[in-house]
Amino acid sequence: NAGVTQTPKFRILKIGQSMTLQCAQDMNHNYMYWYRQDPGMGLKLIYYSVGAGITDKGEVPNGYNVSRSTTEDFPLRLELAAPSQTSVYFCASSYIHPGAATNEKLFFGSGTQLSVL
Amino acid sequence: DAKTTQPPSMDCAEGRAANLPCNHSTISGNEYVYWYRQIHSQGPQYIIHGLKNNETNEMASLIITEDRKSSTLILPHATLRDTAVYYCIVQDTNTDKLIFGTGTRLQVFP
Image (cartoon, rainbow over all chains, first blue to last red; front, top):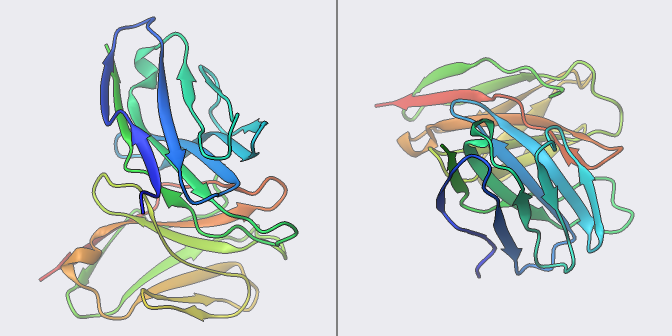
C-alpha cells in the first residue's frame, strides 16, 4: 500500500526557477490537498481539489498553480521560485462519500523540503 | 484563518493521561472537530474526529462540551512516542477545507 507518494523529497532551487512537485495517491480518493509548512509553524492550505478537473484556492495560493487531470495525480507548480517559498510541502488526500456531511480522515505524504536560494 | 485556539505547549509524564484542550467558540452546528498530530517532520497523522458526542478509538478519546465551544483530546496513557505537535481543526463545511492552526507541542517526559 503506497498511500500518498510525493516526489522529490528534497530540492534546492535558484530564485526565478520553476519546478513541479509531484503527488500521487493510489486509494481512489476524490479529494486532494497541498499544504506548506514553514519552520515552527502550522500547515497552510495552498490549493485543493474535489475531483478530476476541479481545483480551488486555499489560504496561500499566490505563486503556485495546480492541475488535476486524473484522480490519482495532483501536481503543484512553482513558476518563479522566490525565497518566501522555502518550506516543507505536504500533499494529502481523502475520500468523501457523495452527500456525506463530513470529510473522512486525510492521508498525508512524507513531504517535500524545498529551499529557494 | 484557523477557527481554533490551543495552548502552544504542554508537558506530560510518561504513563499519565495527557489532556489537550481546544477552544472553537465560533463553531457552527454542522462542523466537525478533528484532531491530527505531527511527529517531528513527518506528515500529520489523523487521530480522531467528532460532532457532538464523545468519541473513543484505539488512539485517543475526544470529549466535546455540550455547547460545542471547546473540546479535549485525551491520550489515556502517554508514551514517549506520543511527543508531537497536536492540531485541533474545525472543518469549513462550505468548502470541505481543513484549516490547520499552530497546534500544541506535547512533550512526554520519562
